[in-house]
Length: 417
Image 1 (tube, helix red, strand yellow):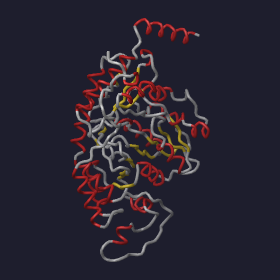
Image 2 (cartoon, helix red, strand yellow):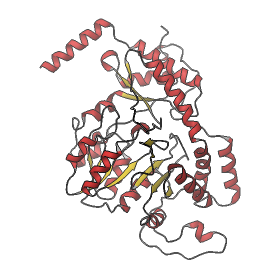
Image 3 (tube, helix red, strand yellow):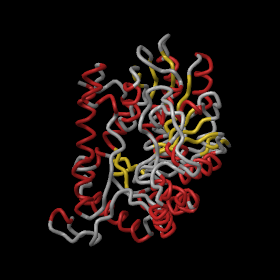
Image 4 (tube, helix red, strand yellow):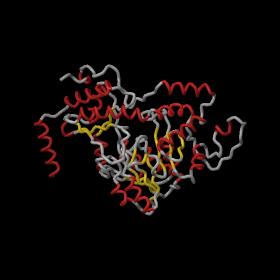
């Protein structure tokens, strides 16, 4: 077995494979140049076109372009009239932004553990978390697999709650024959640099609620009744009024220039990620020290293949996750962690008294999984490098049969004590 690069051996590849490297093509570059030459680079006609095409893709009545999924979630909470004293049920296994926006409106996030098979919020645990102060449920489609929206919807309807989907990972996802983005009252998408569809930074909020869309459009840009394009477009300057104190959450035409072409080839990009996913599944199925997470199977549902999370079997490895990831980094393979559960972050511990042990399924996933490179910007040779590096590191740190037996015996004694 060749030596690890961190121990003086030769790396699997000569250059570093960045985690989440985007695929930016000539069409995006040409569109960006066209925008720069147009003289209009802020919110304008290309944002409006992107909104229209995205709404068509997810089969929603309205799509509102914004500067991040965080902004989209914040606006959705405001439109749902969630505020001080209210509670919002969500998952701890997510990026902190999901919970942060709840605190931004003065409400309290209430965490519910996940289903270990899907990594999504467990609907069976939601009901017991509902109180008279609950106003919304905020499920996250973890890694790209849609939550059980039927079960969540039944609970929401029974208690008069608004469902706001965090679909930051799930632009391409379908749930039981319906496109994610067309199901709940609000759905937020992310176009961050590592996402399947990227605008560098950016996001989208979709809704079918005609009663709130005008307010959302105003809130996106300082609460004004006219956006900048309407104020300065051909026909002359038009005065405006502030309807309420809003936010600087708009997208720009420069970002939309990327998004228009990213969206146009999104299905083709998904095929690339599906091929790489299948390569990983086959390569790691029998590799000691790691566990492949099988995809759920639900008729009419589709995984967006945003994150490929590999679970480390730490009982069969002589290293912890940090050392495993560091070794992969030395082999020039980038990795990620998705996620440190929100209730374990200092602010939430100090503010809400959350602690380790509150949500064991989320904690186990947060402790043991790492995300491997998965991008339409990768080729199959890149994927083979990832496979070679993971295999090399796993074999180097694999415990012997005797060590595993001793480890298991020690674990049994600890449990018995």
